[in-house]
Structure formats: C-alpha cells, structure tokens
Image (cartoon, rainbow, N blue to C red):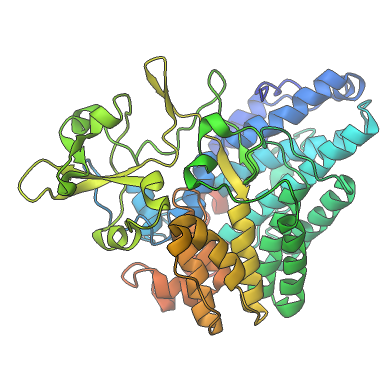
Amino acid sequence: MKINASFSSLAVGVGLCLTITSCQQQLAEVTPQTSLNQQLVLSDPNAALTLYNGVYASLRGYHSTFVNLGEMRSDLWADGLYTESEDAGLKQYWSHNISAANVPASNWGGFYNLLDRINTVIKLFPQTSIEETKRKQYLAEMYGLRAYIYYTLLKTWGGVPITTEPVTSVGNLTDLYKTRSSAQEVMQLIKNDLEQSLTLFGATTTFAPKRVYWNRAATLTLKGDVFIWSGTHLGGGNADFTAAKAALEEVKSLSTLGLQATYADVFDPTKESNNKEIIFSLSFEKNEATQGAYGSFLVNTTQAGTLYFDAPSGTPTAVNSAYPFVSGASRVGMSNAMLSKLNDPADRRAKTTFRIMYRNTAGFPIAGVMLTKFIGRVDAGVQLYDNDFPIFRYADVLLLLAEANTKLGLDPSVDINLLRARAYGASYKPHTNGSQTENMNALLDEYLREFVGEGKRWWALRRAGDVYVFANINPQYLSTGQGFKLLLPITVTMLNTDPKLIQTPGY
C-alpha cells in the first residue's frame, strides 16, 4: 500500500496550538480551508482521496507517541540494563518523575493536529462526488479513528478539549481557546463515534490485503476496549462489560481472523499481506516510511562488535555477526528481574521479542537487551525497519474478551489458553478458572509477554484497575498515595496561554 503523505495544500489545520510561539508561527503560516480548497475536494475525487490518505500518513507519524504513552510508564523497561547513557526522556515516563513543571508529553501529544485532519474528512466527504459505498466506508474509518484518538487522550489526560469541527479560519488567538470537557463527556463522544462507525460500515467485514486501513473489526475491537474501560472507571459496570463482550465475540467469530501458528510470523515484514492476526496496523514500507521509534532499544555499531548473544550457552555469537547493519543506541532496557521473568526458554515469544547481549568477560555479565520484534530485515546492505506496527491484532481480542469475562465473573481460561498454547506448544500449562484476582493476574501476565514493544502494557494495567497498577509498578516510583499521576499534567505554558484550560487534578 502506498500512502500519499502530501495533502496539506488541501487541508491545513492548526489544531489546538497552545503555546504563544507556536501559535504565532502557525497563525502566520496557516492557509485556512478556503472555499477554493474545499471546492477542489468536493469536486475532484482524486483530491478527496489525497485528503483521506493523508490522514493515514499523519497517523503513522504518531507511532513513537503511541509506544511511549502505552508502554513506557509500565514495569517493562524500568531500571533497565543498557550499554550507553540512559534515555532521560523515556526514563521520565517509567520513573513517573512527573509534575506540573516536568511534563513528558506536551501540547496533548500533538493529537489535535491529527484530529483536525480527521474532522476535515468527516466534514467534507458527505458532499464529495465519491461513489456512495466508498464514501460511507471512508467516513466509517474516520469515525473509528477519531474514537481511537480521543480514547488515547482520555486514558492519558482524563477530560480533554473536544473539537469535532475542522479549523477553517483563524482570526485571532482566542479563536483557539478550548475548555476541558469532563471524562464522561469525552467517553460519550467516543461511544457515539463508535456507533456511527459501525452504522456506516454496515455488514462489511472485509480487509485490504495489507491491513493498514481502519475497518469494522477494528471498530468492534476498540468498542470492546472502550466499554471495559468505562465499565471499570466510569461507572458502567456489568452493562458495559456485557457490551464489550458482545463486540469482541463478533470479532472473534470472523473466519478471516485468527492466531498465526508461529508468533514470529505476526511481525514478519515479508508476510504482511493477508496476515490473519492483524486487524489494523500502521503501514511502514521501503521508499515510503520506516519505523524510527525503537532506536534507543537497539545498539550502536561499536558496541555490536564487542557484545555477544547466547554467551552462557557456550556458543556465543557476536551481535554484529547476527545483525551486521543494525544501528541504534542501547539506552533503554529491562531489569534483571524482568529478564528473569520473561526469558523463559519454553516461551516461543521470548526470542522473537528480544535478545540479551552479554559482555565478553569472565562470567559473561549481561550488558543489555536488544528489542528484535520490530528489527525489520536486511535489504541491499542496509537494515530496513519496515515492519508494520499493530494497533489491534487477534491476540488483543482474546485478552480483551478474557478481561470482559473476568469482570463479569465468568471463566476467561479459553481465551488465555489459546495464547499459551501458541507460546508454549502442546505441553503448555493451561490456566484454570480461579478468583477474579487470579484470573486478572493471569491475563495481565499474558499481556506482559505477548505485547512487548507494542504500547499495550500500561493500558492493560490501567484498564484492569488501579489496584493492579500499584501492584505492578515499583512503589519507589508510583505509590498508592499518588493516584493523580495515573493521568498526565499539562504544561504551565499551556495554562498561561489559554485561560480556559485548567490543570489535571492533583498537579
């Protein structure tokens, strides 16, 4: 699939710019959506498709943000072993060194610029000359994507500003001021968008060969996720858990989806076409865009010549022999305790996900960890990081369904065991139904092992409930008395620039 990344001449949105400098620059540079630009979209299907594809190109640019917000605050990469200076920015997340003066993600993560693009499609496409069936499909995708972005904002900051109209003109800075809606209001918008997406999709359950366009199954999976969250955190209770279960069971029943027999095949860039486990992913391709989120999870070329894989086994392999073209910086890693937990030789996921690097000295001490799940492939003498990045895959559906069943007091073992069977083979140890706490801990353990590097662990802990967050995060970094830190603050500059904004409670 080729995504055209150039569509700014058709729709330039300033989003919600919330610093004086950036607003002044954007106000000087912005080209509002004049009637001429809008007319081009409305009259020319090719221009409309450029606008539509531009949303996906823009979405791809948030890859690192999705990983940071969904993973780096968890227990996965905390107190890690690494060979170079530590990435101070990412440490800010996992150490929860967060305050009103120390904000790891400013300006709402930049998501309002993306929302403006999505809102533009939603606003204009009903009037375009695109054939009706396609037009409905494109709008269904945009409503699903908007729900996904607002859900990410809600989980990260709680109540946030709501904007569902594109920026078409900017007279002065005050036009951009927005209050923070309540978490309940944001959740209602998300649920409304999900239903609108499902209505527009109708009974369509098809996928593109490379599953990099939002689809009905993605909307249903997101619905399951959203309703479990609202059932847990916003008072929805069993009614929401039941709605989540129904949505997820519909996805699970699709004959076009299932677990890959081999875990590594899920992430193989040469096996992306009709990959039955993928529901929706971000597209990365040679000559278009490649992944750049994991540079701090790799190793530089100098270190690669002095470090070894598999050293304790007696058959050490030089890192630069196994990966001669990999280049990065080992600035993030797992702790010894996490490595002991995850590096289970019986779990087939482990070696696909990461490899331990050892120093070539007495005792072969561990030097660091290389994330290999998204390491790509060698192409024409370079390392090509062209793995697609899954937003939702079939394994998500299984564990979300296990969570819905757990919270309804039902047995989640069938779905947990599907993942265990693939991971460990025929000799796997099955989970047997236990207490709600035992079931939740079992499925959270699968989240930990299944989704390393995919931006899922922190959200899994948060959705499970606050007690599970505090049970897994080192209290040195996040204690039960710091529940306000589950949400991020906004910057002082944002508050000073926009008088309608208030700080996240607790900061």
